[in-house]
Length: 198
View 1 (spheres, rainbow, N blue to C red):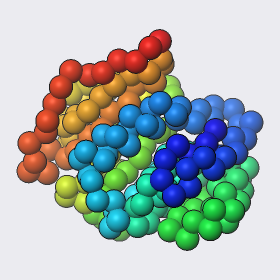
View 2 (cartoon, rainbow, N blue to C red):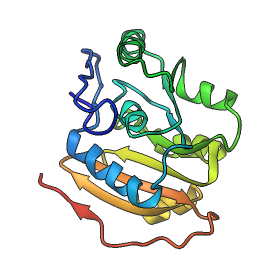
View 3 (tube, one colour):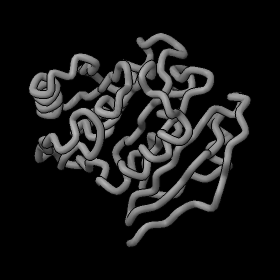
């Protein structure tokens, strides 16, 4: 696996043999960051949070594309070692790696402190709603949340969590969604959800 764009483009991302680890595929990341480039064109001041970092593909991609600071949260010791080693190899000083449970760490972080929050909890874990609740407190007013899941996340589910869906697509088993707070005060430009090859 490699970083696909930006400062660290083509840098290899080590993927440990950890049960349930499922790094975000290249084509999903490419689509996501195209969305972000349209909705948040200047990342130079952006603060990002990858709450279930895993191999770090999303968080490192965000840093590579110019985010001012990215916090990666992970609890698995092997994955933590890989994240720290990759940060050192790339000299990615704008990346902070935090060890711990995603929700425990989220409770300690200041409110409204992130412009973009990346959520890719383990599939079938039932953590989408609690992760969005944690993200809601941490998100800046006009910020965005990315959610990756095994099933489609509906507009009704998003509204119940205090969000609206700005973009959504599917690639194989992966459903991915870009959300923003309902009170962001910005009109979303919506179209039908995209669907990629199975």
